[in-house]
Amino acid sequence: AGFVVGSGESIIREYLPVLAYPPELLPPQDKAAHAEFAALFKPSLWRVPTENDGLKTYAHLRGDPAAEFYYKDKAMYPWLDLDLLHLQCENEKTENIRWEGFAAARYSAVLLSGKNAAKGFENKRLGEFACVTVQGGEDHPLIMDITFDLAPDVPELPRVGITAKIPACYNSIKWLGYGPHESYPDRCAGAFLGLYEDTPASLEVSYIVPQENGNRMGVRSIRLSAQNAPSGKLRDVPASITIIPAAPVHISCSRYTSENMWEALHTTDLADVSAGPDGYYFLNIDVTQRGVGTAACGPDTLEQYRVRPGVFRMRLHIWDI
Image 1 (cartoon, rainbow, N blue to C red):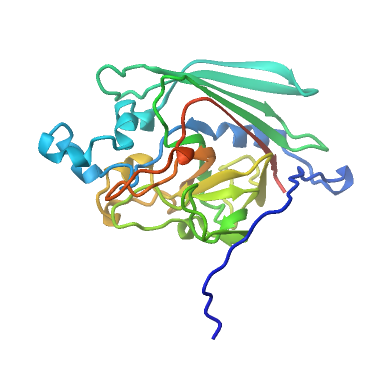
Image 2 (image 1 turned 180 degrees about the vertical axis):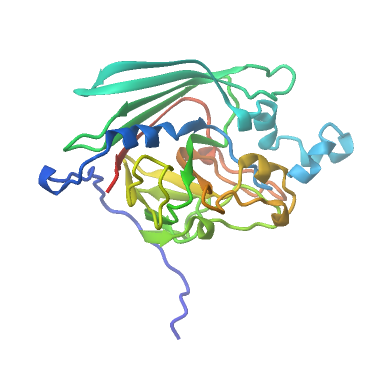
């Protein structure tokens, strides 16, 4: 009795308004804190490969004809050749502009392969990144308008988005999107649209071999709530931060650095950076992310779930309320 045999849903119609608050109900918005929060985010094209992207425990066999199955056409090797883990920004520039009637700052940079790129891929130009930031005012939120313009000769990518080190005092994450468990473009039929809340640690999935995990897709809003927030993390840390994308995004978070996740062969090799008064975790907000497929022992993900280069845009509205 009460056992669910199956379930499904279909969105008939959706309208995604940006939350508007009457000025008399809006708490004072701290523009300095806005600038600090926006500056936390950096562009990212990397995810720690899943075992379907390629078996890192067999990476040392690359080039061995007897082990061809373990490296031929595996998604992760172009990512490693380009060293997307250590993505570089060159020709960085910040300028004051007018954006949709607002005074704004526009940061732009050329994206290059990482410092440890393989021979022949050193300083390869991957494309351009731009982020227009409008500081919050009395009647509007902080706005981050983000654009990636990725070169056509770039191989398929694991993800396109931004990442930030968030003070661990923001230990509650509430999201309106698919859940409650992780979901990816080709692995989401069992996740349903709803309002969910959990801790950063609980959003993670502890696969035996550390790898990309815990993504939530179709996210319409994110609320980070702080408890016992120490001073100095951000200027006058707000009790909560609400992020509302103009279109659904992917989110994930991790208490481990990407370097640690990539190098670790077992969960016991992971070092939690969220512990202690100076702890933090990494929050990822993605325009898109590659599917996971079954290529560890079967076919890779279908073409419609792959991320090819092109132009990607994301707009975030952020309230410190």
